[in-house]
Image (cartoon, rainbow, N blue to C red; front, side):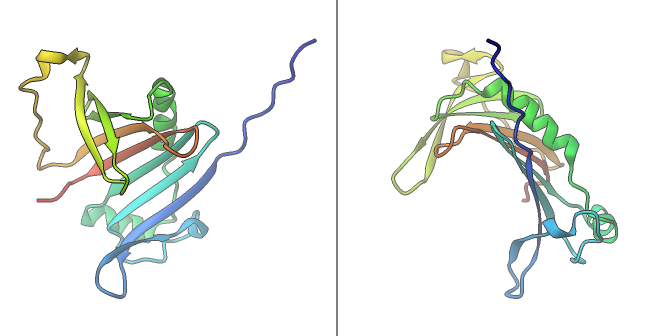
Length: 175
């Protein structure tokens, strides 16, 4: 007897915008209800799209330049489906990650890291491999974060649910 396949659940999507809050600090506000409409914020600093699927939770975070912020603030909000789809696709390759492992792809260089969380939830990471190099080859391995915009993706297993968390970041990291 043939087993009947069940269709995957529909993805749940949310969209957040980081703007100055009334206290003068920065905060993310849920702008999901404005998808397809003009953004209600005039000075967005960053956007974060989130998509939850059966096996993946993907976050696409974009720090905005002043020029891009102006464009985003004056146009209808669009979910960045391409970056979310790319994160979901690549997360499939990391389904074998242990709960104490993380992969960081920084500008195309893949770092595999061990991650240790203490009782307070603070994490420490240790480098395991870089583009396949391991052990003594890593003694002097370092990298500098660029002054220009950086593109990095992080992949790890959720410690709470059986899903891979995929985080994509594009932007300036600051001084």
